Length: 424
Image 1 (cartoon, rainbow, N blue to C red):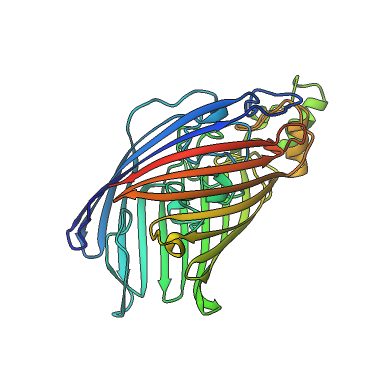
Image 2 (cartoon, rainbow, N blue to C red):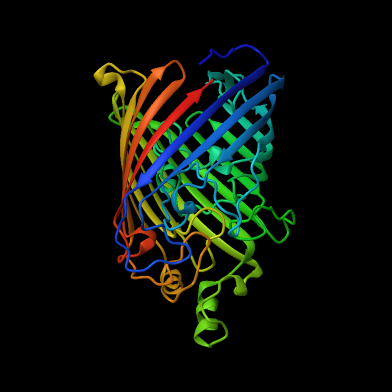
């Protein structure tokens, strides 16, 4: 809505995102406490963010963001591994979060130049420098969202102007450290050198799965994240990027096999992952993320994700395997330069022990139909975003989900969305 200075030491901007979703009634042989509601339902979410930043020195920046988010979405964000709305406010252990503004990010960025050679850089709400050393170290410390920096994708990470689904905008098998709202406290170090980057972050895990409070004892609970990024023009002489990701989480996790054994030994009326939690367990996984420009008007992207899945899904979603492919086109071809359209396809899966746990009636933090006839969750999403005026945009989004929550006797379900977005 307003131009932003490229020379001022301070930065102030904001955004508001409003999403209305509706799905019609769909077939469900049975439903449980964590099922996506099978009757027709609509819901609205709102997220408003105020971004502020200040350059203390040419190499030191500080950021503080205030956010307000309301609305849990259709089905209270339950019943889908690839949930349909990235802006939904999840319940924390079945309890709604307090309403009102909160500090989303509060962090310090320190740039350490390792060469005199410099390159131009885009200025935005998380990066204030307009010129950077091509070889440098960067440090960040404070409160932030890990996927502000890890698993980023030009065409598959923006829920404000592009896709809405959780497992389209992020790698579903990346169970990254975060509280219920998606933020954590941590430290990040990044090394940049011309065409490649490596970054590592140590972050706090929640005290419980999908928990609101973080565990500050890093000796027993933490998330370690490592990503290697390579950029170039290897295909068709056009820009492309490949990112390799790994993570290792330590936390007070439950174990699916132990929960099943306890149930079969009649120690509990149903499998209970919470009763098997033990401090010091870990979960690890890997991801591949790519984007490639095909023509000036078309880009393609995709992800692969794998996690070991033995211990419980803890912070993001219940997804142990994921494969994604998509394409996006800007509106230049039809003389609408600020419009964009895209399509993506995702298949999600879980390991055998996780399948059996749900089939025997166990509940995860977002899944639980009290039964399961397993099938991979398959999602197709398409959107069109139209530029209306200055920083104002309107979007239509359609998602079709087969085997929601990995259950072949529920669905398919179609989710229709309209989105209003303003940047200022």
